[in-house]
Length: 139
Ligand SMILES: C[S@@+](CC[C@H](N)C(=O)[O-])C[C@H]1O[C@@H](n2cnc3c(N)ncnc32)[C@H](O)[C@@H]1O
Figure 1 (cartoon, rainbow, N blue to C red):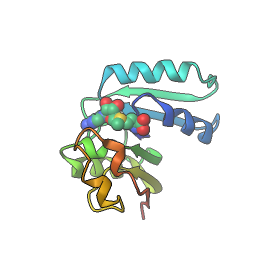
Figure 2 (figure 1 turned 90 degrees about the horizontal axis):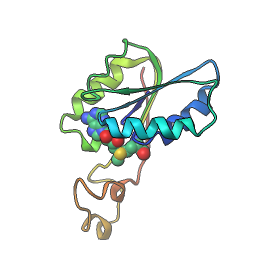
Figure 3 (figure 1 turned 60 degrees about the vertical axis):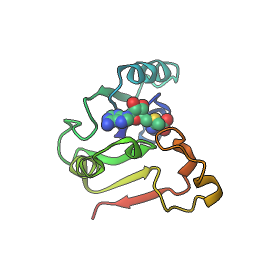
Figure 4 (figure 1 turned 120 degrees about the horizontal axis):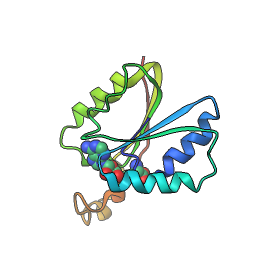
């Protein structure tokens, strides 16, 4: 499951990783991004893969079943969400026991040099603070 899949690049990368037996679900709340992801996926020659692009009101409510995902990924999205705890709760609800979660997000206090941090405009320069990738396994 890709939370905040945007234009679908990571959905395509994930579809290559899961192979023909697997399934990828990309979640986003803007119909425009879902549409763009659909177009991008259509050009990627992945007809033998199961890919669902799901528009939701908020990724804190994906409506996916408990424990249904082996892996939850999210790139550069959680920093945009006012209720981050709700997003983490949802990610863990959907993640199966022993599954993996790989998230990147803007977080103050990472190893971003202070010279760059000073020029970051919150909500606009999303990639400016992306200096660390975290991978967490569900016990
Ligand atoms: C910075 S883009 C990142 C897109 C993609 N993950 C990537 O790496 O290219 C953020 C995406 O998250 C979506 N998004 C932001 N807040 C969301 C929320 N609360 N629920 C679902 N999608 C959200 C936006 O519509 C946008 O497509």
